[in-house]
Length: 564
Image (tube, rainbow, N blue to C red; front, side, top):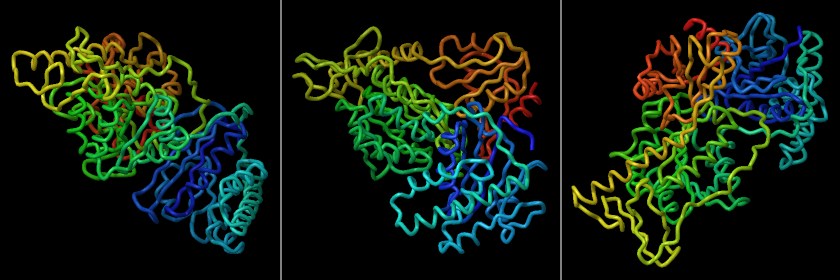
């Protein structure tokens, strides 16, 4: 097999067959070997059974999207072959158990038989891990060291079985590689051993910590629960309050209470759970209480496809709550952006006393890879809190719309807030044409401040392109790589990571392209609708995907060519 600069592995089988354990072992092992890695999951909403997969993309350059090709396929069930047959090509090496999977030309790897011979059928996943490591030419000691570290808490007998299972698999994989002529053959970079391996949930959690998060409140709901779990693991080390509330209504109100008291607090949820938080978002709006809301998108309506991905909740985040009040919405596309935008969300919420949304999705949150350590330089954290004096007025009228924010017990003044319309001191009012109207106008003036701080989109390609593709959030990396593969001098891409408010020069950034094509992992191209409304730009038919799966690079290359 010819040497490549990019190599993709797909592992597929039932939930409970150890796919996640294999990924957890292989990704750091590959990174330490000097390769860039990107891993993404597809899984069904069940604890056992079904048909799940893990895709590993290994490269000599940084990769942040699925390629759409499979060089090595390991099916653990016959159903896995049927489900993922469309990804296979004549060049794909298929390795599996002949006793389970019937496929012509497949190389036999008796994972279960080897595990049974060793005395524990659960070690079949370690046999498979060894097989993949052997096929890819990874070192034995590195693999065994990873297994020792990963299963250090196991009983000595079980650990020994897992180690022997991996060794048997490694030898089998090496034999299969020699027999098939398979060679990873990618240039490696030893410096990558110093990089981190993490997924999107961990990146959001680390960004929240860097942003000064003091507390997180949530009711579990996939895929937003991953951030809660990551924060719980970090909580003792960095001093964060983590509370699993009785429901989402309680969660957002707890977060507002914490922020009212001077903390930096957040909630994490998904679409169905966030629907219960809408009244709390309105409460944040009228009381001008900062809060960070992590909204992890998945297909709806209702429970929809709870373990799949979709960019379908933009309008939900934009319109949640009644009345008029400013907000900001970030949508990271990469692990690094997830970290930096989570950090920025807390600063922006505190500075402008508004709800700030982090709009992610299952694909981003559950994908993992190697990234350089996140830099922590920049301005020192500012709490934007004043000491309340005797004459303190929480909602003092100002030209900017920003009132000085005090918190209880910091100074002798009284910090009064109310969910009804109020006067400058926070007392309820029904002076309709007087202070009530002034308060509405005061809050509205903050829209300009938030827009001035808007983060511009990233542009790739020529400044004056004939065709401009527009992506937001997690579709960005695949679209960027697809644009590079197109090598079209007349094509460019705008990738938005802040989707509300748009920067003042959004229309100018769209340029004079003859054709503008939105790329969205949704059914209705909701972001393109907002761009059209805000800028007056005309859009060609969009590139959409809404079957619960993300775009691959190969898929986008084909569809972008069609759009051209």
